[in-house]
Amino acid sequence: MAEIKALVLNVLKALGKYRWYAVAISWVVALAGWAVVYQLPNQYEASARVYVDTQSILKPLMSGMTTLPNLDQQVRFMRRTLISRPNVERVVRETDLDVGARDGKAFDKVVDDVIARIKLAGTERENIYTISYTGSSAKQSRDVVQAFLTIFVEGSFSGKKQDSQKAIQFIDDQIRTYEERLAEAENSLKEFKIRHMGSLPREGADYNARMVSTSEALSQARLELAEAEQARNAIRRRISGDTSAAPGSRALPVIADPAMDERIASVNKTLDALRTQYTEQHPDIVANRRLLEQLLQRKADAEKNFKPSSDPGASYSPMLQQLNVALSEAEARVASLQARVSEYNARLVRLRGDSAQVPEIEAQLAQLNRDYEVNRENYQKLVQRRESARMSGDLSVATDMLTFRVIEPPLAPLTPSGPNRLQLASAVFAIALLAGLAGAFLMSQVRPTFLSQAALRDETGLPILGSISMTWTGEQTVLRKRRLAGLATAVLMLFGAYAAGVAIILFRPI
Image (cartoon, rainbow, N blue to C red):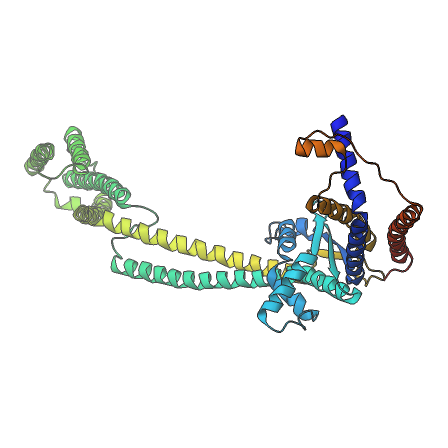
């Protein structure tokens, strides 16, 4: 503790020895600093507050009909891009801040200075934004803030209109492309249908369905033909039996073998079922065909051995005439059914012959139909999207989806906002005092002296035998007091100068 006290005393003695240097340095630094502070140009800050309303009654009303933009995201984008270099360059030119810029370097410096001075603050939750700028004149600050406010408001409308036009132009290009594709698909489908007219499926039926349908129709036609033949044969037998009866008498019973007819019909039905599955060379078909021939031969032999009556008057029986009419109708029906069976047989043969070609044609047709449907569906969607985009663009331009309400318009400030001369003058005064003390201390280090016996003994390492006290004469005492009074006066004047500067700043703002 004693050593620290001794050190502090030595420092104070050293400062006291070079006190005039300290006062002189303080005066010089204070005067220079105050001159710089008073020469600083005034700064004027202008600001504007704007509220962005993103809530519109058209949102729920037009939902589903149009594509509404994300207004909150659009406001955030405008906020982030407002202080961009192109916008700042535009403001610099509009407010004539580039008048003194003679070259590109000077212009860039002006732009950088504006970027450093402009500020945009606000909260995304409340959508209230503040634009402020600090310039060298009140009018300049107001004009800059107004220019940025105009860009902030107008940026949304121009962006929306431009985006809508680009979207509609892109969709129109896509529609023209799909129109060409749709026309090509229609022409390809038409040419394919003309080229394969007889092999195309009808009413959604493919090759297998037509094969099964034709086989079933052939079986049904054969069954009807067999029934018609049986009916015709029955009529023939009835006529043969009627010819043996006398006029006006009862006709003899018709000679027929129902068991034989039933067997023949059963064999025909079996053959029809086998032919839908196998070819004519299949063993089952060959066996049934041989059996059918044998049965028919036996029936024919039985009919040959039957002898009709030789009575010529039998042909004039009314019953016989009716039977002849019925026989003619039966013959006509048998002929038509035979033609139907022949036609179905021919169709079945053609289908079997086209078994390798028709599925390929159907696959190609399905591919062409699929391509056509895809192009048509995309074309219709694009037309709907174009109308939706056009309506969205008209809605965004014609209505106020974004409403800007200026809460505080930019005004030219009457008093400067800076610089803070009181704070700067106080800082200069404190720096001047510290500079004086530092200068005196440095002088003591440059020109050191021993201010006590202990310092001399510690420095030289020699014993101190004694010391001689300083005896002041009367004239020296008076001169010493005058010097102290002059020092105090200089210090007081320094404080007075600081007080006067503060008073000027407070009561007479520049």
